[in-house]
Image 1: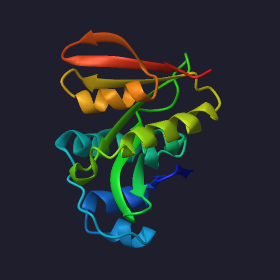
Image 2: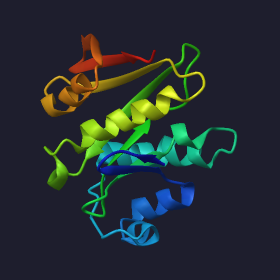
Image 3: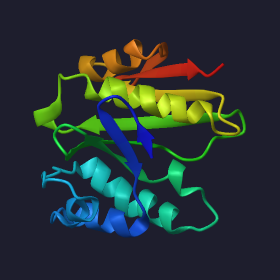
Image 4: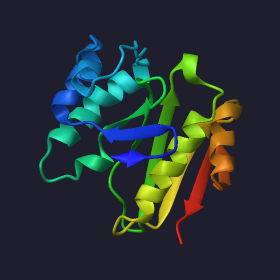
Amino acid sequence: MIETERLLLKPITHGQLLKYIKDDDSLEEEFGLFPNRKNISSSLQDALEQTILPNVHDKDKNFLYHTLWVIISKSDNKIIGEIGFEGEPDAKGEIEIGYGTYEAFRGRGFMTEAVAGIIEWAKGQDGVKTITASTAIDNVASYSILEKNNFIKVSEGEGMFTWKLELN
């Protein structure tokens, strides 16, 4: 688990992912949190079914790089979003992050703080040298989170920006 000033970032197990997908408040109940509907996007739903769940279930993989990390607001005592990696570090030591904040919690700096927390965690992991991320060109809120965390835009194509942060 990662703790920042206002947040807890908690990687969830295979069983907890199943509760997350059900969205029936059972995950919140397990963590002692207030209920909060998730509004899982179709792209996240697909990723959960096709890659996240199978990879988290695979005992040969480090689940921390494959699962969702729920973001919990300490003051609200609710899950307010998710952050995670697109897999384990590649041969060059690169990992990619993705993230999302629930609409009611946007604009309060939570995701900027969560990304900063995940960067600090990644710095302490063996084999991690670079963090990358992709954002839609028109998603100013998402890429300003990366800019505030010192990511550099390295390319643009197909309606997306690619960002990179060297960890040294």
